[in-house]
Amino acid sequence: MKRIGQIFITVSLVALVLWVIPWLYNLMTLKPYSTPFTLYSCIIHDFTSLDRSDGKAFQFIDRNGNIHGDEVQPMFYASILASRGALPDTIEGRPVTMEEIDRNSIIVTSDPKDINRKQSKVHLLMESVPERLELKDPEEAVVSRKDGLYIYDMAANTLLKEKSDAFNAALRDKGFAFPARLFAGNPSDRKAYDEGYLVTDAEGKLFHFKQVDGTMEAEHFTEADRINLKHLIITEFENRATLGYLISTDNILYMLKPDGAVIPTEVRFDPQKEDLLVVGDMFYYTIKVSDEKGEHFYALRSGDFSLADKMDRPYEFEDEFNLCEYIFPCRFTFTSSNDGWVKPRLQDFSWTGLIVDIVLAVLIIMWRRRDRNPHF
Amino acid sequence: MNKMILYKEWLKTRWPLLGMAAVMVAFTFYSLLNLAKVVEFRGADILWSTLVFKETVLIEQLKYLPALAGAVLSVAQFLPEMTRKRLKLTLHLPYPQGKMIALMALYGMAAVTLLSLLQALVIGIVLGRWIVSELVVRVLVTAAVWYLAGWATYLWMAAICLEPTWRMRIVLLLILAGLVWLLFLSGIPEAYNGFLPWLVLYVLCGAVLLYHGVARFKEGLQD
Image (cartoon, rainbow over the protein chains, first blue to last red):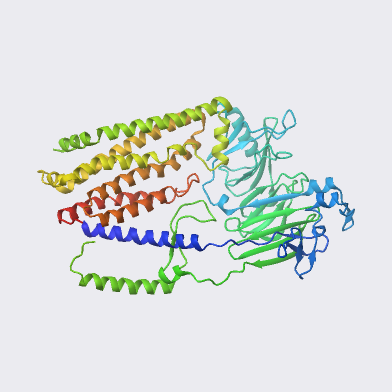
């Protein structure tokens, strides 16, 4: 038993050292790294990045190195330009008004850490057409179970059986097969209108449902049946240009129109591994997909979501001395910036570290064999 | 003989056990009373939306209590054995030494488990009045790793008490610190789901450290 105890302690200590020392080293040597804010310009039709190199706050640089002021991004800085009287009347032959700019401004983000975690089976349910017009905080919740959706009155914590049956019947009428798989919704009153939920059924088919006057309004988007979906994002923007974004298992981003039309785009995005930032305006959507190696920018035309331009920006890593590589064969971590799970992960395998450790282990064993007092 | 050993353990631990039970009752009552007031003033809806949208399970105030209970019980049970080397007497009782250590550890583990189960039961019943069972399960599954921390501190602190040398005590203390850090590493609900069975296995394997310490004690090792 003593020998087993020694092995247990040794293994635990090795794991602890491989976890804590590299973590501490990384913490001490960590340096900030940021990339410039980049948008596609509807004026010069190129990607422009915010340049702070000479201390100026709003100076943009394009891919050819030309310097521009904030007038190169009239959609993003519309209010400031308008206050200076510098907002163009027309761009690309289209009249520009503040109202149109506001209505078409969108921002969407997606973070793998929000996706790679245990998702709740409970989804809050809003009334999409509230009696007093203004959206109200949800009072009911949908609980997704194997055999259907169950609607609960949250305040009373009671099942609304009749309503649940009616909701399930409405979905089954549209061909929905329980249990539901993917859910995407934004049950918040901080938006212009509510579109309920985009949801996939047991067969991966895409449906949309919302609560209208207390009853379920459901629709099946047959055009999406041909796509194997792995992630959904609902968009409830003022311009109603899209109902949502669909991401397939082969990482293609599709735009879902409110009428159920599905438009494939050139954007490749893995929601489980990559961050997404969409900044859209009247003319273009700038889509940034970032992973561990760099950023990929896509400019899509706002009307038909066709590709206008594309740019890749790899991160500029400097070859820095990493002491841990010469001491440890690998690094042990339990958390990741890409998911919400705590689990053991071995990273940064190093042959040098392994050889150094083997030599050290042999030396220690030799030293201990010579030692007549094994009191440790 | 089993009853006598268990009675001896009870005599050693009754006041710390009752004290920890009182602390856990008080904190649990306070935490649930807070939630009851939130429900009274803002409605139970707020608990649902908080659980769905935020990285919380509402009872974070209670997360360190099982770990504290494990440590307190362990010290109360095993420290007296080591003061003035009473463990020698215990090991000389007409009873197999291995079974003796196992019975002592089982008593302590059962006490920690009982405290944890009672607390989880009360939390489950009370929360079940306000939120749907899926959310209650989410809360309790998230809290499972906190209860595991109770077992971990119990076993490791027992091993530290039984260990005769300070050098090895420090090593065990470092491993315990790492283990406790790991068990409280993330506040994301159900973050440990897949890893939890392996953590349970590792923590239970820590029982071998009790025998390791006793073996070293019998060898006469000391600083």
